[in-house]
Image (spheres, one colour):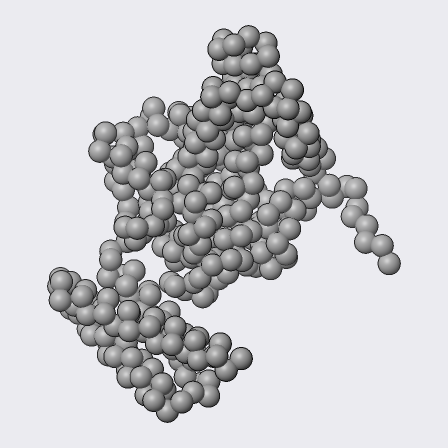
Length: 365
């Protein structure tokens, strides 16, 4: 039996654009480089446009507008509105509506890019085929009242075309004439759009498939340092789904999160304020709870008596620490450095025990 997709389900406009730009990026762009070469201007302009548009999505569309993790000066809001349009990921209003729906219904039928429907669907398939019926904008009333957001939504297609293709071509022409304009159109325009779009798509697909879940296993979202490298820090997706109103995704000091660093810098410059964070004790408690759950699962495995004893001891310490935390929180007492140090030590022991069990399991296999 041949599987057929009803033609009335295909989103022809979006599909044509996504397939067309990908085709040009894989054919016309290499052909240009083959015939004319590529110079420093084209390389720098590509990365400048990629950073501006990529950060406009992660910092603007995602952390500023979707989750309101901080407040921004009007100049910052206007910048991310304009360069966010250049990512060709539609308007802030539509993007945020879909993303808020994703968080509310993650891994379920009403999740627009539900990973349980397959990797392809989560990555790009949900864009190629129409949602029937189209969901209403019933979860972005706050954004509809924003005049800058409303203005962008009304003119999104014109803005996207001008900023993605006309602007790079004009800059290229001003730098080096018609040939340079063509190169900028193909490299900083077409190829850059494809790269930025698929890095965003990876958050919906790869970050729900590859990586670890140190904070919660209630949904498929995962932390992946590799994905963080290509998504401006959005790869720490398990943390984000557990604490979606934190302006940070890479919450650990060593984690790569240029979006977080950019927001922090804007705050220091007086262009961002009211940065929302999750208290460190809540983060540690989430890690402890998940470590407890994983240890409980491991206890059901056939293990040597000595190893089982080590894990049981760690598990009991975790439970006792959690009870102490609940008692202190109930009394509204201030968190002490000593208790934080104890939490970190217990968490480290729990993770070491989990790694020990994994090594034993691997050796037995």
